[in-house]
Image (cartoon, rainbow, N blue to C red; front, side):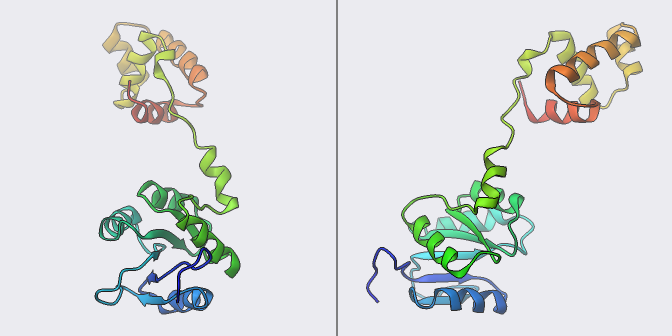
Length: 201
């Protein structure tokens, strides 16, 4: 079959689950040569790869491996549902897009064709979640004393222990924390500690 703009070319459905492979093969069989299974035939170079990653605890390693072995192929991650964490992990590892079993057959074909043109493919219902991810917080907006106290909070110290360590009253520690929480937009010391650890100065 000659490859055209609407023809995804050779497609490898990388899945160990026969039902998943059968369903995707049925959807794509009119578009190109489709090979379902854990590996492509020897010597066969797929134009596109659909990787079923729903059963993987961490799909990133496998996606990076596939990208390394088939750098020219378009790689789409496939899940059973519109799962934001799975989509985020797949895209972060270098997948060209994320599709799922809840999509219509024509949507899957269209997604593959769009991805092969170099565009990132994400279902509409996940796009908002990806766009609205929080940007890193600039901890420099805190005072040096607030930063000092938050560092100790993230180390697991209580207000009493922090007060003893800094030679301040416990009331003063609470006041500094209350002000820091308001500035950072967090509700408690746990959220503040997580934010502090994930946004290094």
